[in-house]
Each structure stands twice: as C-alpha cells, then as structure tokens.
Image 1 (tube, one colour):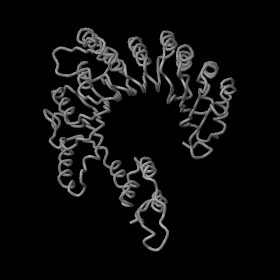
Image 2 (image 1 turned 180 degrees about the vertical axis):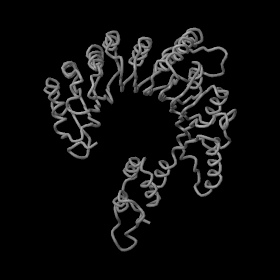
Image 3 (image 1 turned 90 degrees about the vertical axis):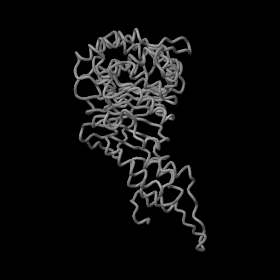
Length: 449
C-alpha cells in the first residue's frame, strides 16, 4: 500500500506508520505526535493526490485527511444537485458521518438559479448541517424570491461564520442588509467585485437611487438598540463581523455605502483587507469615511489602492486617519511596472501612523516588480523618513518587505535585497538587521519567470 504513495509521502510513512515493530521482536518505532501529524497534513491541504495517499497510511491520519479531501462542496446546477443526492445515499453507509467533513459550500450561478435553488432549497441540503463557510458566485438576487431562500439557508446552516460574495449583482440595499442579518454566527465577510453593473452611467443612476433609499430606509441605531420596522430579520445579529475583505471591485463604494450607513456592522472589526481600484471623485467621500470607520477598531489592516490616488484631498484624508488599535499594516501586493504610477498614498498612510497610532508593531510591504529600475517608482525618501520616525517612536517596531515576483528573466536575488535596503538608509540604521527583513522567497538565487 505504501508503494502507491508519492515521493512526498514516503518519508512520512516511515515515521508515522502504525506498524508495531516490537511485536516482531524489534524495538518500537517512535510515534509522531498527533499535533505534528495534523500540522503536516494541514500544509498539504491543496495537494489532493498526496492527501489521498496519506489517508491509506494509518488510521490516525484518516480524520484529518478526510477533512481536507471532503471539506468543500461546489454546486452550479440541478445535475450537480442530483449527483450530490446519489452520493449521499450511495456512499454514506461506507463512511459514517460523511457529511460532517463538508464545511464549505459554494453556490455558483452558471444556469438560471431559479431552476434549482428556488423557491425552496434542495432537500439534500438538510444533511449538510456542518457548513461553516458559504460562497455565492455570480448570484443575481432578482432572479427569484430572495428573502425566503436566505432565511432557509440560515436555518439549515446556523453555524456559518464566513460569507463570501463573488461577482454579485444587487439591485437594492436591503438585499445585502438582510443577508448579513440572517446568519447569527457570521463573523467574516468577503466581497469580491461585490456590485457588478454593465456601465458607468447605469451605476451612477442606481447609486443615486441607493443613496436616496439609504437616507430614508436605513435602521435607526440607538446604542445597542437597532430598530427596523416591517421585517422579520433581527439586524442586531450583524454586530459580530470581525473580519472584512473587499476585493478588486470597481464598485466597492456601493458595498462601502451599505456598511458605512449601518456602522454597527463595523464596530467589532479587527481584521480588514481592502483593495480599491479607481477611487473616483464621487466615491472619495465614501472611501475616506469607510476607511476612517474601519480604522477605529481594526488591528490588522492590508490595503492596496490603484488609480486616481494622487489627489490632495485623498492624501490629506489618509494622513488624518487615526488607528488607535492598529498593530500590523500591510501594503500590497504593490505592482511596480515600468510605468510611473503614483504611490504617494503609501507615505501618506505612514504619516498617519506617526501622528495617531499608539500600538503599531509591524509594517509589511509586498512588491511585484519589473526589475531594479521599477523600484524607483516608490517615494523611498519619504517612506524612509516616515519609517525612521516610527522606528524611533515605537519600541520593537519591525519592517518586512517581500518581493513576491519579478518580471526580469534573470535577476540576482541578493542584488534586489541590497538595493531595497540601500533605499532605506536611515530606517536600516535604526532598525538593524534583526528588525528589518527584506526577502525574495524564490527557491534559487536567480529569479526565473
């Protein structure tokens, strides 16, 4: 059985096998601690072939390998629902509690969603009671009666803690508001291209409509009391969102509007990952207000801005931010091509930390470069000055810069590291080698792309 495993597995088989050598007159082999076994298997989560081989090695590994092999279920049509039903009825007897390994459910709208997800959910969903993560992709709420389906999902999956909305169309604010309020255990929200519309004029029209509705239809927030008439949804359940991710959407301002006008959704926020493409003039007040609200409580922030970032109102707003709880700030991934993008927003945010933050411990910068020349795009003199001030102000402050990739076919890794360190002359002197880390995590000393 071990002969069928891959080369990655064979060294582990020797250490972790259940073979009892003492029964054959030999000293027993030392057993690998279960914690270490789980750690090894957890790092193989995306290597299905190796996990399948590991599941045949010993019974101790079986629960963890099954958890990774069967944790995710994706459905995109009635035929896949039928396949799920046949699988549940046909294979369940051979694997007791098979469905307890399924923790993530993705519903992908390839076919008209009402063909298989409305007006009620498939009966097979009732056996998936251990779902923790729900992903909706290319979802159009207008194609069927939205509210009953969301409420039924919440009843069937009360333990959902993470909701991911990917390439979603929403026609009115209450769609998102009701969805978030339906799941009592929700603590993480990820929106990728959350509001998708066909053209800018259509977006402008709907955005004006949304703003009018938000002003007249939002629930009143009175301390811990949230009042919303005419709905069965308890919107107070939305207060526990602790992790938020906004992806590369052109229309993040629409999503931000919904969250900003219901601030009880953000007051417990601890971790945020924000990527905003093209901050238009009309979206500038929304963006700055939204980021300021997140800054009140966030402890770990990753941010990437791209397009229209050179305007003074935006830079001034970034400099004025206050981060009373922030501990880690991550810029990236910052793409530095041969062009001349404006990157003054980075030193502007560093300036805000110098002025207002009292807890910052680490700055991370992830770079995707075209070559050594492209590094000159960044305002290194300003960045060096701000980082030096932070190094003097906060004891134990560390800086980590990672070059994730390089378009140059052949470039010595050591040259990249030294070039970046030389651009941070004063910060390098203050931080020293132990608190300034510049890495290019490629296997070889030369970049190959």
